[in-house]
Each structure stands twice: as structure tokens, then as C-alpha cells.
Image (tube, rainbow, N blue to C red; front, top):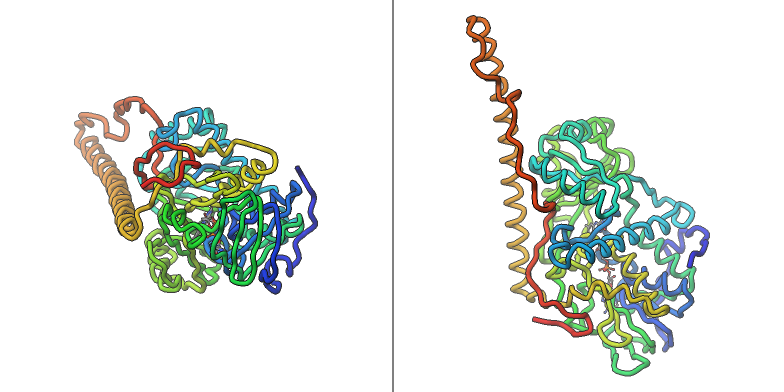
Amino acid sequence: MTETFTSVSQEEAGFRDRVRLSFDLDADICVIGAGLAGLSVALEAARIGASVAVLEGRHIGWNASGNQLGTVMPGFALPLADLIERIGFEDARELWALSKEGAELVRANATEENMPGIGLSDGVLEVSNVDAGDRLISRLQMLNEDFDTEVEGWQVDRVRELLRTDRYFHGVYYPKAFQVDGRKYVHGLAALARRAGARIFEDTPVVSIDHSGIRKRIVTPTARLRATHIVLAGNIHLGAPLRRLSETLLPVWRYAGVTAPLGERLHEIIAFRGSVMDSDGVDHFRIVDGDRLMWESPETTWAARPQRFAGAVRRRIRTIFPELGNVEITDMFGGATGQTVHGMPQIGQLRKGLWVASGFGRQGMNTSAMAGQMIARSILWGDERWRLFSPFELVWAGGATGRVAGQLVGMWGRASSAVAGSLARYREHARARDRVREARLAEANRAAGTGPRRPPSSVRPRPVPPPKPAAQDTEQGGEQGTEPAAHEAGISR
Ligand SMILES: Cc1cc2nc3c(=O)[nH]c(=O)nc-3n(C[C@H](O)[C@H](O)[C@H](O)COP(=O)(O)OP(=O)(O)OC[C@H]3O[C@@H](n4cnc5c(N)ncnc54)[C@H](O)[C@@H]3O)c2cc1C
């Protein structure tokens, strides 16, 4: 159902007194958590006509949802090649199409009319840290032809024309991916949900639920609520209401910083206007406010003050763009993402009337919008598309041991990608040195009247590489095997 909304005022956009639930209430749907996931469910369900109450323990967008970069891409945190391997080509295509729909839902919400100052702009570039042109071509073909996604392959020269660094090689440009002001988006979503009739209560942690009956009971320190459906959208902080669900997520804190204004030189060094992310999932950045750089980089599996990582962000910027020198970081922020063992989000019905929407990892913008629509439509219209996520059951993430292992896997991934990047750059420099040496040799031979005995390697015919059996995706994404089962089956260890 499409509805027209008038724009969100400052007050509605989050700068209003928080309302705590202090009286008992009845609703069709109770959503726990006012992050992107909970608000997306609330907006869609309220638009369709359900009575919805959202209970938020802190405030809207308190965690990752209010501290993210606002890049909107198709796909999931799990790389596409792994998705295909896991569930087969046809199902992967359906899931990919849903993820694209999610991105389009965000676009439809994030208009200037709905969310003034949201600053939507098109175009996202994924750059490779290694020289992997052939892999890129098969990936481009697959995305374009089989997954109906508009992408362009950029040669190294083009990437380096727009990003002055020798760290990046080829690029995949997504003209239809886009970015918005991430913080404004979550508050805008809350305002749209309120407009549609949802009631949002902040400072209202849910301490327990009883989901056994038809009318379910939800308990907060100050009030009780009864609802036919509960949607668990608390991400890693859900806690007491269903602790075993939180334990299926590996918390990963991600941090980002914004530099002081850098002036015109920033545009000389970074001429690309949209978001840039590297194919190993290490760096993610874009220019904001005209001449500041917003840069997301380090991650940990424990909570820390984002300010602690200002030095790490500054060093990372200097490593990638040495010409920028030592930039000043004026603002740091971050939040915890919930990563599942298999890398795919948890979307579906656990028991009759008990729903889950979490585990969106570092790609939550499009996927939470998609989840919100599917869950609301399933509750109200019987839409069964969420069952496509059933192969990705709830798997215990390993508790404290899991976190340590997660950190080690993350460090290994980063270290090996750094080594691969150094090797690629070394080979590139070596090739350049060879070309110079061969040109000098040829020149010397010409001068001596002997002529080159064999053409320099740069003009020698190259061997044709064997065809790749399947496209490879170079994104990072820890993955372990899991048992296939429907969500309704519960949590496996
Ligand atoms: C630095 C950073 C940059 C990112 N950049 C991007 C990006 O550019 N693009 C992208 O697609 N994704 C990005 N992400 C990922 C994205 O932010 C997350 O996937 C998404 O925000 C997860 O939303 P969520 O609603 O599931 O969780 P959360 O944002 O964690 O929201 C859950 C909410 O539930 C509340 N809650 C929990 N338990 C209870 C309870 N018992 N009672 C009441 N309330 C409760 C919490 O207080 C919280 O507010 C980024 C993340 C980070 C950290």
C-alpha cells in the first residue's frame, strides 16, 4: 500500500521528549527495539492498518542504526558466491531480488519531502585491494545477466583517476546504489511510523515475555502490554526476553570517524562522490559536508569507546591516501552489529506469533527494510516469502569463546588481505620496473645496431587464462557450516 506523507519536522525527527510506557496497553503487534529493523516492521504494519507499539530500552537509533554510514546496496553481508553455494542459484536469485526491493523501499522512504536534509545521492564504488581483473569480469557478468543488477567494471586507471592511491585496483560501480544521512534516516523512519499510527515508547526496556498464549504478555519495569504478535528486533542487546536468541549473534562493534574540513585538496585526492568500500570489508568511506571525510574502519568483538579509535582511523586514512597526511578526526561514533554464524539475517517466525528480525551484520539498511516489509505482510496478509530464509537457521554463535574466535578470524582476514594487497602492489611495481629495464635494453640494442632479440614483455602475447568455473566474491564474511532447518525449529548448537 502506498501512502503520501508530509515531511518530518525537527520535533518528529527525534528531537522531542521521549515517551516512556507507564500504563498497560493492548496492541496487535508489539515490536521490541527501535533500530532500523523494529522501525521498518512498525512502519509497514502501521501503514497496512495494524495497531503497533514499539518498545525501546534506550532511545531511537541508540545502537548501530543511529551510528552507521547510510550506504544502501543490494545484497547481504554474506557474499553472493557463498550464498549461491549455500542454497543454489535459483533461491539465491530470489533472495537477491528481495534485497534489491529492500534498497528500493529505503529510496522510497528517504525522499527530501519525507525526511528533509536526508541528502540521498547515487552511486557506490566497490574497489579491489588486489589485481583481480579476471575475477571481476565473471562477477560483473553474473550480476548484470543473472541477477539483474546494473553494474559497471572500472579499470585500474579509472579507479585511480578518481581515488589517488595505489592501494586499489579494479572497481565495480553500482550506479543505482546510493547513500543517505544514516542518522537522519533512522529518526525519519520513526517519524514516518508515528505518522502511520505506530506508538513508540523509549526508555522502556522489555524485561520478559510470555509468548505461550494467543495473546502474548510483554513486561517492562513500568507497564505490561498484551499483543497477538511480538517482533524481536533487539539485535545483540535483546537479553532477558529471549537470551538464547541473543546468543545466536556474534557482536561486532564497528567504528567510524569524521575529519575536520580538509578543503579543496580532498577533492583532488578523492574525486569520487559516493561511498567507497573495499572488497575485503576493511574500509568504507565517503565525503560529507562538502570537504570532510567520513571513514569507517576498525572493528572489535568487545565494546569500547569509539573515541579510542580516532588514531586508528587517522592512520588508516594516511595509509590509503598518504597525500592527505595526518588529518584531524573531530567526531567518532560506532555501534554493535549482530553477525550470524552463516552471515545471513534472521527473518521469520519462531513460534506462532513470535517473530524475529535481526542479524543484519554490516549491511542493515536494505535488509532490515526488506525484513520489515516481509514480516508485516506475513502477519497481516499471509505473505510467506520469509520462508526463503529458512535454510539459515538460528545457530548458537559460541558465547565468549565464539567472540574470541570471531576476533581471531577477523584479524586473520584483515592480515591476509593486507598481505594480498602488498603483493599485488609489489607485482605492479615490479612490472613497471621491468618495462623500464626492457625499454632501456631495447634502446641500447637499437643504438648498438643489434635490435631487440625478443619483444618486451609488455607487448608479448599473453597466455589466455583458463575460464573461471564460477564467479568469486572477494568480500570478507566468516562462514561455518550449519544444519539446514526451518526457523520454527528453534536454536541449534
Ligand atoms: C559504524 C557502522 C557503520 C555501518 N554502516 C552501514 C551502512 O553504511 N550500510 C548498511 O546497510 N549498514 C551499515 N551498518 C550496519 C547497520 O547499522 C546494522 O545492520 C543495523 O543498524 C542493525 O539494525 P537493528 O535494528 O537490527 O539493530 P540495532 O540498531 O542494534 O537496534 C536494536 C534496538 O533494540 C533495542 N533493544 C534491545 N533489546 C531490547 C529490549 N529488551 N527492550 C527494549 N529495547 C531493546 C536496542 O536498545 C536498540 O536500540 C553499519 C553499522 C555500523 C556500526
